[in-house]
Image (cartoon, rainbow, N blue to C red):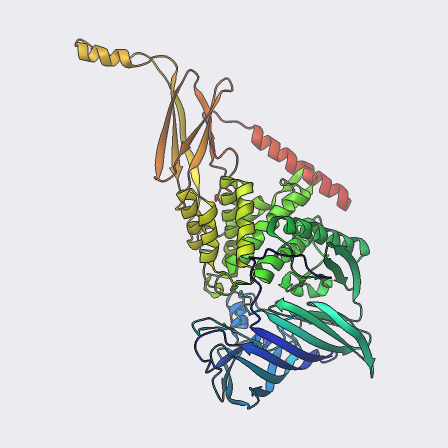
Length: 619
């Protein structure tokens, strides 16, 4: 099957790094022995006197690596048994047929520096060959084994990215950092035990060969920037076709009904994404549902393949399981086809992915219950993100390097939550039709180009005319500022003719100018946070009359004064809930008299949900 046609103006990827890999899995030792031939193109105008390679599996070699040091520092250390460590070693390295002058590990051992005998000339192509042995760790951080299950990710020596000015982007593997690589063609031959099933990036080519108790199968993936695979004796498949895409759910003995739900959600979500963001440009897509004891391998994206799982807490299928499937699917666009630098600007992938995930879940399940429902108690996706962000609302900006956050919790809350809520606020302010065009334009304009944050903001500037909104979205993502407005005071003053001495004609004229009828209604608005947006305020008067006023939101405080024949009863900031990023909405409204009805309504919902829960568990 061929992918659908794309616009003639859409860029195709420059094939900078292409791999031909042969790999053999030892399922008892959990080792992958391989050899690779890399065809690498020096795209810069400067010769490459060194080559840098990622050796990600060395992050799990011992407790001195950046990954384990961070885990221990943040009290997230994991028990590691004797046979649970991971590593990767390289041998027989040859550059351009003449070997290498020098080859040594640098940083914490997750980067390999190779000095070729002759620098690679500008705009030229070189072939690099090597052998390697990858020892998989017990499953953690997107890769590894549990029993006979193997998820083989970040498993081969992968060359870094060299910018046009000759600068290498080949960071060590930190606990919160993910991956960045150039596009190319992958042809990978996998050799596994005879009883093992295999699923991988790309599509299977040729026939499966069986020899000496082993199975050999070859996969090819064009115009991708990574390759991952899974293998195990219990591997099963459930397949479906969505347009030009052969979709499959791979699992390891999970109930068919649960697997089918994930396949259905993936199919429906992919249809929405192609409608909103443009065509999915590959002809295969695989969701790997990992076993329950391998959940650390779930929730990860690779080109044309991502991982999730069917296991979840009670009543949490939508929030924990199906939500993960949708999120990792959306990554196929922002991670897979755009491929921004996830280490330098993780928000550009995770933030946009989290935002679009919310749009998909709202469409599939309803905006008020997109994360789940128990009885009368329901949870919306955007409320879920806002609740999380309140834990650390002003600790870090979303736009910074992955290893510079105060702690992992701040990384996840700000990179995922802050970015998504800022984009949701932008959408609610400018409207979905314009936001849709903005997203589509960004994806089509920067497909396969490794876009930066400035590329995204450039598209925002094209589609958003209001300068306050352009300033807001930059500040919301690039600073740690908080968005928070409150109604601080609400009261009404009954008007009457002024009292006092009015002997002069001047004083009498001033007295007669004042309208003594009705009420002077006053509302004090307060900007508590650093982020600024024009806001709408709804004034509610006795008898049911309403009036909308706007404030530019720039100053720290602002008095709204409105004359009306009825006294004001309440004032509400943002009545249409457009400020998704706002830290709290509990201070957005204030009444002149207390009202207990909302509290009673919430208590009723909580008690109803509790009753449903007790009936289900049998109390």
